[in-house]
Amino acid sequence: MWGVPTPQVYKEKLYGKKYVWFLIGWYADNWFRIKDPAINCTEAEMAEAVEGHVTTEIVMLNPENTRSISNMTSQEFIEKLQKRLGKNPEETGGFQEAPLAYDAIWALALALNKTSAELVKKGLRLEDFNYNNKNITDEIYRALNSSAFEGVSGHVVFDASGSRMAWTLIEQLQGGVYKKIGYYDSTKDNLSWYNNDKWIGGAPPADYTKVITTFRFLSQKLFISVSVLASLGILLAIICLAFNIYNGHVRYIQNSQPYLNNMTAVGCTLALAAVFPLGLDGYHIGPGLFPFVCQDPWGHPRGRCGDTLGPAGCFLTTMRFHIRAASATKVETLLQPGMRMILMGSL
Image (cartoon, rainbow, N blue to C red):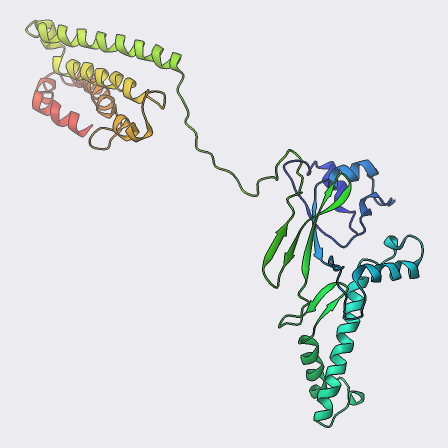
């Protein structure tokens, strides 16, 4: 019954600081120590698996030393019950629920007594009751639902649906012993917490996934290394661009389509220059500057122009040689500066 899932909890390691189990609280305090042939776990394993679990149950015994309608306190009731049961009363079935049963009989007796007085006014008697007599049934239900008295289990009162409204006891198994850690009063929606709860690991497990926002920093050694290589690449691109412009009148340079070469050099320079702003992180700038550093004024990622110009120049150069090989008479007309700008814009 209650022991069936516990071996699986132990075998699957579903216990410890990441778990907390909520169990019904009306089992005997030593239920996990009672040997059962159907359970293939030792007592130590069972105790380890259930350590720290929380139980809830209705308060079955009034914690206050007040006299009930029977002129007995809760402790006097328990003493009389233990004397009647004899040895080991805790192992007797229904021992813990005895105060509830005792108060239930009182509630029924008071309701019948009240019903009898109401029925006399209507010319009826309790002795006339049967399950088909709705008038008497309604009177009994009305009297029972309006009952309110002090019992050995606490204040006895019922809600509109006829359910007992009582305190809820909250206990936790600490070191193999159940400890009271709080009460909940449903009539007043009030939680009384003793702050004596103990958790494996020092704190209760999280009941939701915590999302922690952290910065991911770039390795400074890697950033410096790539920046040095990018600087060398930019320097080389500038040298090539200057060489191309300075020697633009030379026939060999003119025949090599200097516009395409210049466009490729400018594109490589812009793409490599994007390494510096894109490599900045929380070590260098604040989060508020990230959009400005990582995007151009039009909202595009930095380096997009370079990524476009560089490959476009290479593509047009390749296309020029392909067209020349296919039809040498049309290539110069097709790749005039105006046409080159149109093709570059389309790319």
